[in-house]
Amino acid sequence: MNKNRLQLLCLLFLVMPITVLNAQDDSVISNKRLQYPPGLINGNFGVSIGNLHYNFNEQQLEPGFSVASVHVPPIGVRVNLMGFRFNKNLSANIHYLRPVGWVEYKNVNGDNTTHTVWMNIVGLTLQDQIPFTDRMSWYGEAGLGIVTRKGFKVNNQWAVKNTSFATTFLETGLRYRVNQKWDLIAGVSYTPKNKNEKQPASYFYSAGFTYNMRPLAKEKIDEKKKAGYKFPKNTIQLGVSTNGLGYGVNNFASEKSPIPFFWGGDVEVRSGVAIHYHRNIFHAKKVFSFDWGVSAGVWQTRKQRENFFTLSVFPVLRFNVVHTKKADGYFFYSIAGPTFISKNILDNELTGRHFTFQDILGIGTFIGKNRKVNAEINIGHFSNGNIYPYNGGVKLPLTFCLGYTFD
Image 1 (cartoon, rainbow, N blue to C red):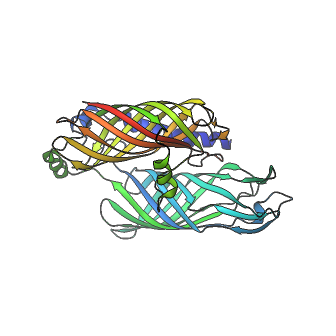
Image 2: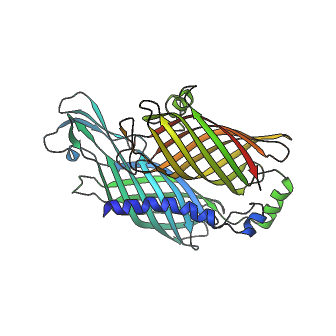
Image 3: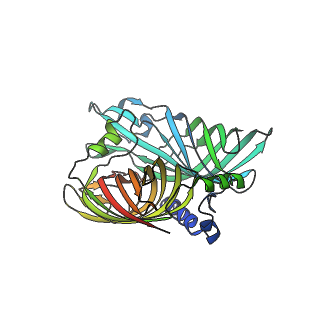
């Protein structure tokens, strides 16, 4: 039953972006994507950070194991991946909560080694709020939580077991409306302990923000029309990946940067070819644009030259930072694109299951008076975001893309 619920939640991640993509009608397209499209109007996203308290100790160990000390890092982060407001008070949310650092079990059975336990919580919830004033309100949130834990073995015996199970997710707190777009929130969330799985209860005391996508006023749309910047409607790309230049960019972004801003992977891709299609559904006056994309790729691993393929649906957040008469330059970030991966054991690494996520980070340009030619360089990553206990990750090296845009 737990496995089926987890797969259902994963399916929601896959279906929701497709629904948004299909929801566009001709009126939205003819409006040059200046208004938020159906599915994003009254949507929201947000981030909260705070103290994540979950009392991992020797009680999580299997019989026959002892530990010298357990370190539980106190900082956690919750990302509200997608929210939708049905009316003034009621909304639905999909969110992801995890610690910044993993729990550490040190010196288990005298092995003088540090072992990590990974844990995260995915939530699918409904939220109601009661206003106190024009700006301040109380909110309560409840729904389904999926707790996933990756344990560890000592001498090929489970010391802390892997687990994944459905539970209850509860949260309450205060919301302060700064303006129509921004809210500040402070609250505490709770998931109960599970004795059968030896999982402690979790409490997350946090503060953060929510960004609300309210319908844009006609004056704002008219202002964007007059600006005259070009945002291609459709883009098709052919991308070629190669490790001929190594994995230096990947390693810097995921490990060597003072503040890592991307992910690496236990499995390294040697080469690959992919086709991408992007459809722009919204853009701001000058800089920001939002696309949905689909892609298909064929890849080969570095160590054992294993071939596999992927099929993805993904969002693209593009920031057009350079504008000239002949070209526009941009950087982009695509995160958590639901993906089917044909193999889940690659180079003897268990990467999870056939459902995973695609992440891409890169720079590019649209060239020509009508911006018909597109060129791009990016790096990529496949992993399941720890919604399954095993999450080895797949590292895509530098990928060189050439594309064409059309209306």
